[in-house]
Length: 344
Image 1 (cartoon, rainbow, N blue to C red):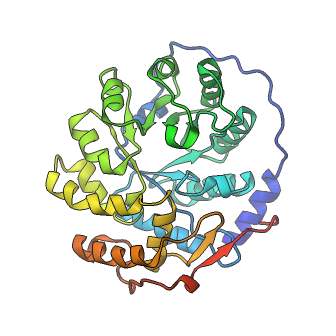
Image 2: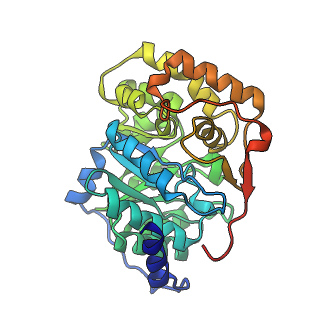
């Protein structure tokens, strides 16, 4: 059934990118009801995308993963983000997974589609199609690699904000440029501006929060203090892929320095190499997805894989996704690397 659904979706949506007419956007608009609903969320997961040995999305593993997220109190999912490897998808795949998630789980979780791009035309195309597919909110990013100036950055993001609620993602470590507060304050007037996913740390988030701009931390290791000491709204988390219940506690149950400190070694482990390499490896060790990487991603060294089992024991295996299965170190030869074919 899932394969038939995917095939019909791709057939209906497999259209080439096309130029759009100039967008005329106005500012000084109050947030609408849909945008206000997004602003209230505290815990969203940048959901991992699992693969089958043929390189296609493993929908059975994905479904089980999403069910576990919902059961453990995660309020929203980022589809095809950095963690979900949207940059390794075709746009047809990307839009399919947004629609699939919304159709199957949209009555129980908020679906945020990562439809940003360094190409304004692509971002506009994908965001428009994402909302047509049912997503509740977009995640938009400033142009990377082919960088622009502040005016170009503002116009690029505004072009994608036209279609519905948008979270703006600032991660200079990946894009090579910072969405500075003066640019954000101009974007914040738009009725579809839901807030910022911000990776520039406590000081930046405190500045925005003092001006009424919702901010979700993009740094898991900082999210507890961001939430309780610097006015942050919550977190868009990588770690919640494997310990959603613990991340829920950090965001909802009040300040908990003991738990936050206890989780720091896990945060450090998950970001020892570029995300999502450690997370992917961890979920493969936990048996909740097949040990299949889409290149250019690969596994962490065996010593790190052995360390993970110790971290799981220290935090309590019952808190981790997949602990009903046998945790494994896995050998290097157990992992598979694929380059998906053009016909997915």
